[in-house]
Length: 429
Image 1 (cartoon, rainbow, N blue to C red):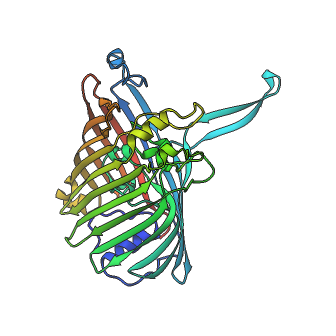
Image 2 (image 1 turned 90 degrees about the vertical axis):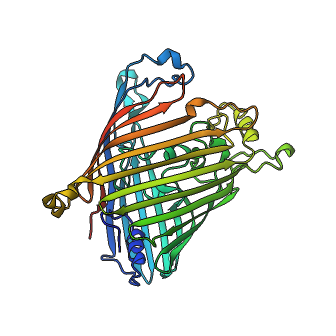
Image 3 (image 1 turned 120 degrees about the vertical axis):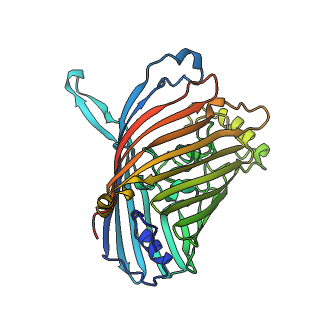
C-alpha cells in the first residue's frame, strides 16, 4: 500500500515501484505514452552581503545590505513510452534557472560586427535518457543516462518531495544533485518489502573537486563527452516493512584521479587513485498526517592532499577550480511537518493539505583535511528552517519559509526569507 499523501514521481519506474511494494505482478502502464514534468518558481530575500569576497574579508562586508532574487531553479519535461515485450524508454530534459537565451547578432551601429548576445543565464540539460528491459519483478536492466541513487535527495528531488523552497542544502552542496550519469543499472524488488539497485558508471573527475562543494563538480564534463578512464559503482537498498516508513542505505565507490582529458602519467603519481567513498542512510515516514524525513551522508577522498596540490598547479586555462580539497566531508539533516488541515473534516475531504514544518541541517565540505591543507571555517554551517507547505491539490504546492544559516565567527549568518510555487505530476493518465 502506498503511503498516504504520496505524490507520484515522474517516470514509469516510479509507478512500478508503488505496484512492487504491494506485490502486484502487473507491469503494464495505463497508457503506452506518458507525459509529465515538474517546475519551481521562487523568490528569496537574503539578509546578507552578495559580494563574492565576503568569506575572504568578512569584516569588510558585515554591514552590506541584503539582496533579493527571483528564480526558476528547475523546470523539467518528461516523456516515457512503453515499447512492448517488457521494453520501455524514458527521457527528461531540464531547464535550470530559466534556461539559456543566447544569440549571434550583427550590430549595424558597430560597422556590421558580429556580436554574441546573452539575455539570460542558465542551463539546459538532458537529465535522463534510458532504455529498460523488465525480465520480472525482481530483475530490471536499465541502460542510458540514469539518476545515481545515492543519498536522500537524488532519489527524491521533486519539489513535492521536500518541504524547503530550494532542494536541501547539505546534499545539494557536497554531492552532485540531481546526480545523473550514463551507465548501466540493475534494480528490482525482493519479496514484499525490499527494493535494490546496483549501478556501474564512469568515475568522477578530481580536477573539478573544490573546497566549497567537495566532489560535486566531478560529475560534470565541459566536453562533448564524459571521460571514463576510471569506473565506479553505486548501490541502494530500501526497506518498507513498517507501514508508512521507508528506510534506505546507499553508497558509492570509484577512482577519480587521471579521469580527465589530459591526465598526468608521471611516475610520482603511479599510486595516486583519488578513491571516492560515500556512505548514506536516509528515511521517510508518511503516516497519521505526519511527514518526516532525514539523512546522514559521509564521504572520504583518498590522496586528497596530492590532488589539492596537483589541481592548484594546473594551467590557468584549465576549467579546474584549483582549490584545496577535504579528505572527509559530512552532512546530515532532518525535517518534519504536520498537516493541520487534517483536523478539519471539510478541508480533509477536499484533499487540501497544509503542513507546518521545521528542518535542521548541518554540513561541512571541509570536515577533515590533510596536514598542510587549509580548512576554511566558512565551509561549515548549520541551517534552521521553519515554514509552511500548502497543497491545494496533490500536484501543486505553495511554500514559504524563514531560514537561519548559522556560520562560525567572524562570518555573518546567512538568513533568508523565501516563497515558492511548484508543480510535479503527469499530464497524461
